[in-house]
Length: 341
Image (cartoon, rainbow, N blue to C red):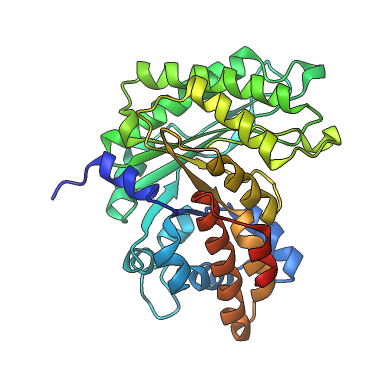
């Protein structure tokens, strides 16, 4: 049976379901484990992720797929079952992060370019055999208006690379998740975020068309339009929703089946409230859901804290966050539901 890219993409953005981004690099997960006082060993990383993948209610009802790191897609659970098989048994789709991270862009201080195209065709073939049916590549666009960041060259280089990655994925029978993240770390206003995000997405879709990427078999993973953390401003969910949807209606083709937001450093409830506000002003031509890492994992990480006796508590915390984001993806979340838990 041939698996159509369009069908896989549609399953990833099935009503009320979203992605668990569990593709933290070894360096990133070490930082998260340091916070909860857990040593970052291969076994601890496996135990932690296995706890989430075995959260039956969350995985079957609210999670459509899991983005994995190279180590994790090859790991077996404590009982010897491949982690990929546990994900599939829950009805979710295994995916893989394939980029090699952002490096400084030569000649453009403050800008980065994501590397990892070398050997990607062969790696994708390997990941397909391991069970991956979608992939993720993250381009990082920082904003620093004082330094003239991002440069036009940074946007052009990163979007061209995303398009080359996406074309290679589709050739391999893998749905590309295209992630041009405009960072929320700076001191910029929501309007500057809007302008930079628009410039990035306009260029991105130019490049995807030029590379003959089938949009119906792709997913966009963007930032929300939001003020920088150092701006001292807190935007209301309604303002974030209004500006984010205005932007997408201007530049994201309706052929794209779904948009799965990154949380980008937002707090758990903040990411949920903003996603809910975005869906509450629908209907939209695309499904709008979540592809959250920290916003799904911070609570279960803390509840688990590396102890086997805390697995049930960790799973309960994960299930709650997944349920809240499921409701937000349908525009049905309410703050009172958080207190009830």
